[in-house]
Image 1 (cartoon, rainbow, N blue to C red):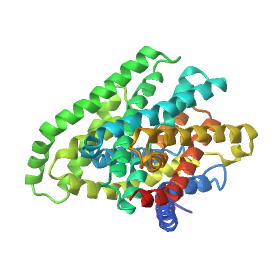
Image 2 (image 1 turned 180 degrees about the vertical axis):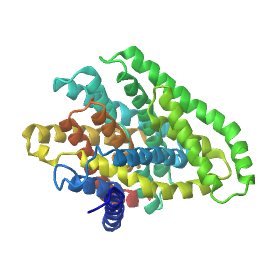
Image 3 (image 1 turned 60 degrees about the horizontal axis):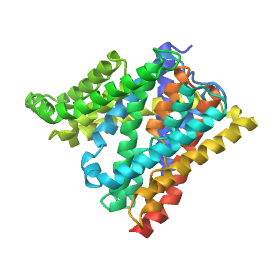
Length: 382
């Protein structure tokens, strides 16, 4: 008879080893780990094998740590210098890439008969670009330091910043059903203050704090201090009524200007490899693939997919001539922040299982399609 420890340990072994094995296989065909983790969760979840329960408290805790670590990592790798270098075209690309999916997605959702709040949430979910996926593709093509690369990274960073900003407003919605514009805008403003204030404080105080910590010369002190710092800001954000990812992302931004930033980022990558798979496996386990047997789900998926892809392709008009197609396609992949939105919406009752399935499928399809289309375009631009 298995003990509770043996049962939990075996599930952890299967999730981590299965996610890593799929990541290795998918990387050989130009895809990322997120695709494998979502598919693994779908396969092991209650709708197929029924081997893992996405509502299990231990899996839920590991997934929560995973998303906090991921948001922290995204803040650490968010190169604000890249954004500043290409700020004007990046802002234009980000503006079109946010406005079109947000507007068209919300309008179509209203046409489906959904309430204002849900429609706005669906549109907002379509706005975020996968900073990690776009950055990896540019690095692989050795295009990080080109004009197109700087614009894509800068615009993707802006997309994620604005998306997390909007997520804070939706977090407020949960405390004020039905949807209230005043409360939504107030929480958006508060999250903007948190993110902006974190940058100001980070530039001024973080280097001094981590300088003192480093002088303690104790093994592991730097990564422990960084993780404590991240979790503290996540808890602080939650105490303000914001999503924990806003605080974790702000913590990453604050540490961008300290001398130890690269060492911390390398060590946080290990935490990402350990904990983030649980979040995406949970996201996959909550997806019911049987829903795609319904004609309405298939039709709505195709429409939202068209909005998601078309909106980002149109964003390329903000880029210089000759780079527009590459920039537009580079903005296509949804990933981490899009899944944060989708899972947040499902867990908090904003989204139905059908709408959640549509959004996860959009994340999967755009993540798979982007490298296939983008690689030849980057070669042409280079």
